Image (cartoon, rainbow, N blue to C red; front, top):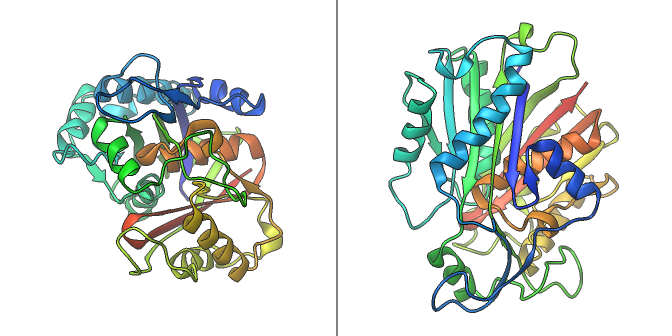
Length: 326
């Protein structure tokens, strides 16, 4: 089995997973209008850090926070072990040398292994967790430190504006009058282990299943039938029934076609009556961090039970994971 033994979120809502969970429970959003963040960019509504952050130091802080939790469960400096692999999820489109920051993060912790970078549009954070599970299940490593991070730039914001995809106000996913998405900044880390000794007698998250499909529909538009997302849901539902699922963390961007596609896929999978978690109105779309941020919030909020996290993205990509908290 693959267990989550440590986690962390750093976002405009707070530092540490619990601070972010408490902010969401209190109904506090990081979204606000930004008028002068980037030169020559129209005002946009987003959840951004008050002070611009540096990518690698921000990721290191998140890993250190998650390791504090993991070390209490597995008393080893697991970041430096050859049995540990670092996996970075990021979609940052204006920096094609994505391996360099991943290497810098791994070197900071003295890890000897080449890190893995997962960059698969908006599904990256879920795909990175699936990658961790596959590597641990195969016995290639004992521990995986999965980091998701993206910081917004002029390139990204202007690109989404050119698509007319940004909402001028806080997003309203699945609302009939939704106007689009809001961007966000965050870093999140989830540490996974296949070592039974890592969980002791404490509550444990078990990453039970994962699936990735591409609907091959369009460069930016999702399949109207939700085919890719539906197949992901069908895969991760193997061995369980809709009655076994306590919560679904949807992608919920607030864009017209994505929300419709998710609705169709969920209904096709027979999951329409399962409670849904929608977190973009709190964090915005944090891109490479979204799959990890929203997994942590979903499970921390659920407490105990079975949780599905689904994401979709440009290029027709779709991904889903199923976790159980015991």
